[in-house]
Length: 157
Image 1 (tube, rainbow, N blue to C red):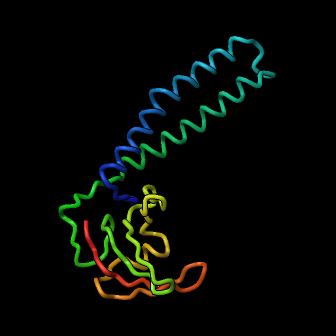
Image 2 (cartoon, rainbow, N blue to C red; image 1 turned 30 degrees about the vertical axis):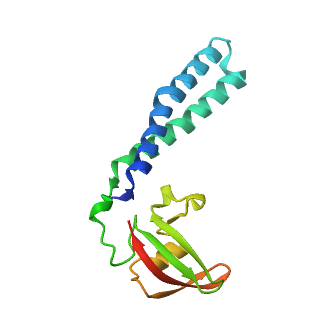
């Protein structure tokens, strides 16, 4: 079973850049640190060697995770999005009836979520509660602080 993740081109490019950094910069540095620690003699009592090998394991795990993520990633062409209802990579302007304020959110994958940029995960309570809704609809979404009522004012790319 594949675990397909949908991304903006920007989000996918960031993942590719991080993977390239791990493979071309971090991995060689760790290999060099292991070689230097190995040159210092007895490996059974060499804390530098142990630390470098542990760091290598973490980097290799991260590389494997990111390779898998990239293999299951798809970029969505925003020009093809249906804005008649809320879907991933759509922007949605909502009015919070609990506090009377408006906000604009972009629904993205978990890996791209960043609240500072108003990008919320489709798997978050609010993201999941907005999916499939249409303009004019009021979504009652249960969040840790209680129930929030969000009216869909506009859906756009």
